[in-house]
Length: 476
Image (cartoon, rainbow, N blue to C red):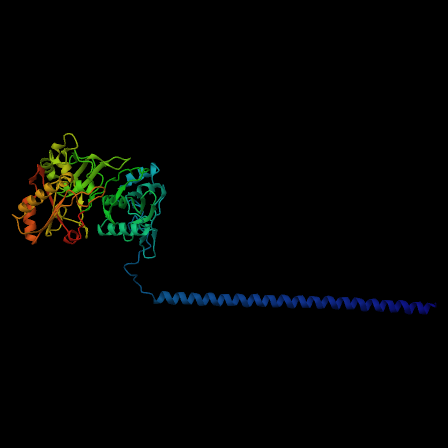
């Protein structure tokens, strides 16, 4: 290769290198322009954003100045001043010493003692505040209550009617509680009923302890022909500071528990064949009974021949003792006296502790009703004859004529029935004499004249009877 060719080759390479260098410079300059343009656009966006925020702040400031200018210069009187010397309103205590549901009748100290003894839970639901500032308790009246107080909110009910349902028993007690005014709040006080049909008893669960105690006043109440036996359950433990006995008396309900008191009477020497109703009929001739218990053998269910009772009016105790003590009843003589030693000198304080009497619709509420019932033309004479005295026909006719002659002195006698015993059968009304007068006035005169009289050395006891039942020969 000649020198000329070599020179041209080098010149061509140099020219190519210069072109490549120029191309690199142009690329670098283009990239720089693009970055500059991007930064310029970013700065422009930031500037516009700052200007927009500035305009919004100026507009908001103008609105605030306008609102302040339109407000009254003197604030209303009810607006509390922000001065450090402002008068603070007295804070209302909405939680201190507010009794939980079911414990409204005990003091805070008693409630605290119950908590310490573990008889109620240490925590309780407190009232909550509504938007109106009112305190609202989470649960109305003690719904189901705590497990710790459950034993104090349950009652045992014995001698219940056969085949009774839990629903009907609950309805009965809820209705009686409402009629007697013993409920503490709207709604049903009885929450649940459990019935054992095999052993003929039930358990009632109430919503509050106080309502449970008041329901014991219905001990002895008649439900579908059965006198209910109401007791505390075996696991019952008294709550501190709360009464164990009801503070009310329901007229017409004779309790089956006669508590020890200065007015408790003992009746001994009763014939074993007399049942509860027959003994009560004898006792109520002096006044209505508040409580009665005929003591029976737990194995056989037969009477042991003695009973205890208490009258509603304690002033008739002496009259009942004088009239019944030594009375010939069948082949026995009654022994009637005060059950407690030294009770004759009962203090005035004990007399004044008589429970409040409730007027319950549908129940007997007067002494006259329990003494003789509603006056009718039919008069029942009791404690005059013994069943064995009616077996002989001649003796039976003699008694019949003797009664007819004596009763005719008070008015015209329309009919007489003296049920006689029959071997192997239980004859209703045996030992009683039923006399039907033509007018109600004659029947009332006969009751006044015959009550307390002696017949065969026995004191005559009287009561009125339902004429319809008499004509159907229902002599119970």
